[in-house]
Picture 1: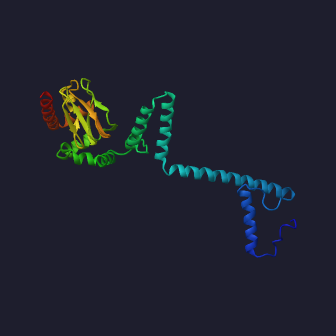
Picture 2: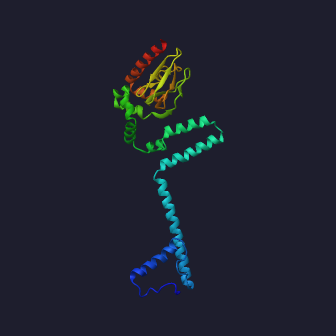
Picture 3: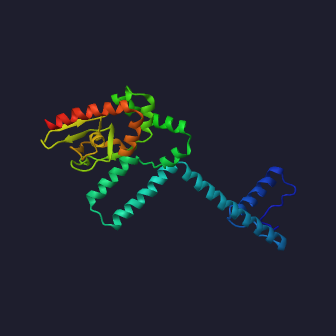
Length: 268
């Protein structure tokens, strides 16, 4: 060794291990060949080998650390990646500023910063687990809705498993009068106005439902429905509506009773 490097043969084991650790870390962290340049071909090749191993381990460490950080909140990362695509889409089509703002607010209220492939997750579960999760997620809707609170639990589960979650912004027309109805809606949270030709407004809020008249009569919408606030709704398609009510004819009569009352009020 050169004069700059102290001889370690007679030093304490602490000093020997400290210098050995320093030499190894110099190679493994790819800083260089350490305090002392390698001498002789054997030393050169051993140093190069240790530097290659160090570079490989360092790259693997960085890769694992990056993957760990990304996996800590993968749902938020998925949302951010999705919203970047939405921003590029809006920019590509040169959408006006107010439309971009409404789209941004929709994504914020609909996904709340996290995005899951819920259909795929629920599709992988057993039916009892799937039903348990759906019943838990919709517990507030069931608790606030007299139709569900007093109904057969099997009917409630059959309905809930077919509902689709939707969000509407203030001023959105959820239903337009005269159109063909393909869905009915249950209000989890929010306020809507039912608008009739006589310019009469009827307000509905949490725990109410609307749009069933069209599904029962197979006609066109008899009134328009506008969202007054941000509305978190669950929709039920006409096919699923009829499928469930075929199994529970008594519930069809309950829907028909409410529908007749609403038609009378619209007629007035």
